[in-house]
Length: 213
Image (tube, rainbow, N blue to C red):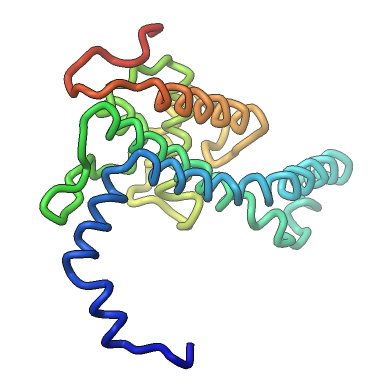
């Protein structure tokens, strides 16, 4: 930008504008839904490639055995599998915050985020007045683990973090596994959230939106 003028830029994006912009976005379910859709765009773009790579890897392991599978180098398509689950979880978090605003009102007050400061998705859902079925509690517990640990870090804060989440989900195998059934459950939950957000009423303290639990 040859004609870029820092003084003009700073005059336009002054403190009052930035404060108002922060509140406008933070308190708008539409903006939170938009963030969720951007995250899900990554899933839509990379998901088929990652799914195909995982199917091929499982077939390779079936034919050649686990030892040969572990010795095989990982391609980028398999490396992307874990962060992709984290991105799904981030999209769930954004939609839950959109629902929270619809149910409870503003998240941003006096220039600060005042919404629920948690990445535990079941806790966030409860704070939005959402009743959860047992299978939804399980998938949210698993997504929370991917959001906070397995999507980006090699370990959790405590040695038994996986074990605690496994007790919540009922899984017997490694909680760090993620299969097609998990993706379907996550996608269904996201779809249900979209419908609920579209029909949600305001008024904090009213009855939970989900009446079927």
